[in-house]
Amino acid sequence: MLERRAYLILLFDFYGALLTEKQKSMFDLYYQWDLSLGEIAEQQKISRQAVYDIIRRSEKALEEYEEKLGLVKKFQDNKEKLQKALELIDKLENQLTSSQKQNEESLFRELKNLLHSVV
Image 1: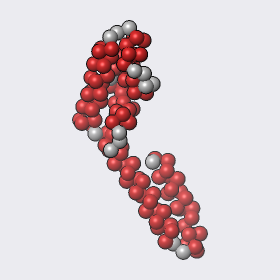
Image 2 (image 1 turned 30 degrees about the horizontal axis):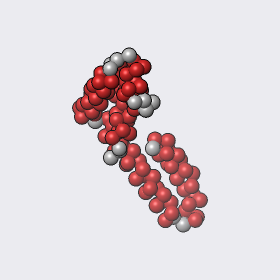
Image 3 (image 1 turned 90 degrees about the vertical axis):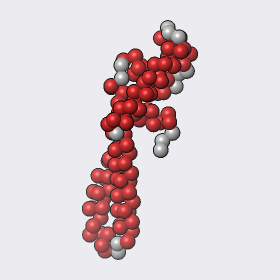
C-alpha cells in the first residue's frame, strides 16, 4: 500500500473534481504545494482550524468516493497485472533460443511497448 500522503494525492487525482472548489484549493495547497496549515490560513484569510477542518473533510470525502467506486484499487490492481505480464514476457523471451528470438523479436517489442505505455 502507498504511504498515506501519496495515497491521498492519488485519490485526489481520481476524485478531486468531485470536491468543492474550496476543498480542492485547500487540499492542493496542503498536499501538492506542501504549504503548512498556518501558511494556507494566512493566504486564505481564515483560521488555521478552518483550514484543518476543510482538509480533513476533503480527505474523508475522497476516501468515501474510493469506498463506493473503487477506481484507485482497480487502477492499482490493473497496474500490478500489467507489470506481471511484462515480467512474464521477459522470462519467456529469455527462454527462447537465439533463432526463435530473431523470428519473434518484433512481436516481443510490440508487446513490451504496449504494456509499457499503460504501466
